[in-house]
Image (cartoon, rainbow, N blue to C red; front, side, top):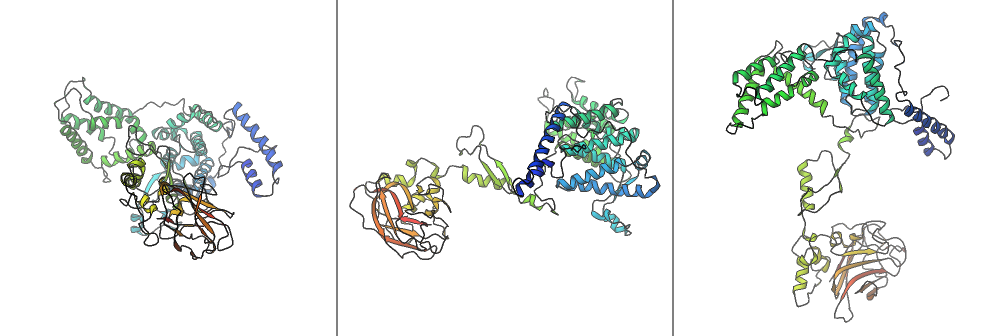
Length: 627
C-alpha cells in the first residue's frame, strides 16, 4: 500500500484484499490476520474518501498520453493472422457463457490485445477478414481441406473492425457490469486514440457513441459509478465532442423516407387515404437501404425512425374514418409490404425482408437485456445447474378479487423449466377455497353433529378404519377425501416441546400415510401430546401407531387422559410396560372403560409416565384414532 497498491481493486469474484483477509481469518485460527485486516480497513476507508472527494481518480489512466502499444511489425503477417483468428474466439466465448470469470477473462484479453496494437497494425487489421465460425472448428490450427466441412460449418467472413465494434455494442449498454463497462470504454478510447478517422463512423453507426454519452451522464451516488461516468465523460469530450453526430448521406435519406411513410397516414396532411401505388412507391425507396446487409446498421435503422414508420404502416387507423374496414386495410398494407420486401433479392440470394428482420432482431436484443445469473462454480465445465436451481416467485392477489384466498406477500419456489400452466394448476388447488377454509358451522361434519338430536356412535372395526372421530373430521363427515385435520386447523395439537419438535411436526401424530413418520419429543421425562378435538366425546377405544425414527422407542408406560378445559385431567387408562407396539410403524387398539359422564371431554392427552422400549424418554407417535 505504501508503494501505491490499490486497496479497492477486486479479483474475478469481486472480492477486495480486505474481503479475502476477513474470509481467511474466519477459516484459520482467530486473530491470524487481525493486523492485516486493520491495515486494509484503514487503506480502503482512505481510498473511498479520496474517491468521493475526487471522482474519477480510481483507475483513471486518461492522463497517460503516451501510446502503450508495442512494436509488433517485425512479426508481420503472423500477428495479423493470429489476431483475426483469435478475436472471434474471444467474442464467441463472451457471448456463449454465463460464467463471470470466463466473460471477464475474454473481455480482458480483447482489451489487452487492442492496447498492444500500434496505429499501423490496427489500421492494417481494420479491413482484414476475421474468421467467424459458429462451431468450435475455428480453434483448429491446421486448415480444413474438406469442402463439405466448410459448407457445414456455416463459415462467414467479417472484417476485424466491424466485429470489434459489434462486440462493443454488445458490452456497452448501461445495464452491464461496471467492470465490463469500464473495459469497454477503454477499448473505445484505444481505437479512437490510434485510428480515429477509421473507427469513428463505425462506432457512430452501431450506437457506441450514444452509449458512451449515456454512461457519461450517470448521476448515481455510487463511487464506482461516479468513476465510470467521469471516465466516459473524458473519452467523450476528447474523442467525440468535436465530431458531428448529425445523420448524413444514406442515413439522412433513410430518415426522409420514414417521414414520408408516416406522413402518408397522418390525418390532415392531404385529407386522402393513400393508394396502393403511393404505398408501394415509398416502400421501394425503403428497399434501397435493405438490399445490401451493411448499407445501414441496426442503430442507424432505429435512429432513422424505421420502427415508428413500420408501426404506423401496419397498425394505424384514422380515428375520424368510422366507415373504413380496419381489417381489410391492414391486410392490404401488409400484403404490399411483404410483396415489396420479398420481390428484390440481391446477388447472394438474400431478400430485403430477411435483412430487415435481422436488424430488428439485433435492435430487440439490445433493448430486452434480461439478466442471466450463473449458478455454477467457477471451475464448472457447464451451466447445467442454472436449470436446476429453484426460482423464487412472489405471489399477489389481483386487485378486486374477493373469492380466492389471499396469498399476497408469500413466496413460492419453482423449478426454472416449469410452465406457466403448471404453476396455475398448482395454485388453483390452493387459492380456491376448500371445504376446510369455510367457517366451522358451514362444514358438513359439524352440521351432521349439530343437527341431530341423538348422539353419534363411532364404533371400532379395525386399526385405522374409516369409523373413527379423527377420520370423520378429516373427511368432512365422510363426504370428502381425508386430509390431516391438524394441518388445516380443524383440530389443534401441541406438545411438551410446544409446536416445534426435534423430529417431524406435531400434526404427524395424526398421520394416516402408508409409511409412519419420524415424529417424537425431546428426551425428557413426562413428555406429552395434547389434541383439541373441537367437540366433546365419550371414548370407547383408541388406536396408536409407533413412529419410524428409532426402532426401540415404542411407548411402554403412559396414560390416556381427557379434559373439558385443558387444565383439569381425568385418567381414562393407564399403561404399565405395555408391549402392544413393537416394530416401527406397528399399531394397536385398546378398549376403554370410561367413567360415567353426560357431557364427555374435548381434550385428549397422551402423557408418558415411564421410559420407552429403549430406556429413553422420547414420546414417539405417528398415528392416532379415537372412537
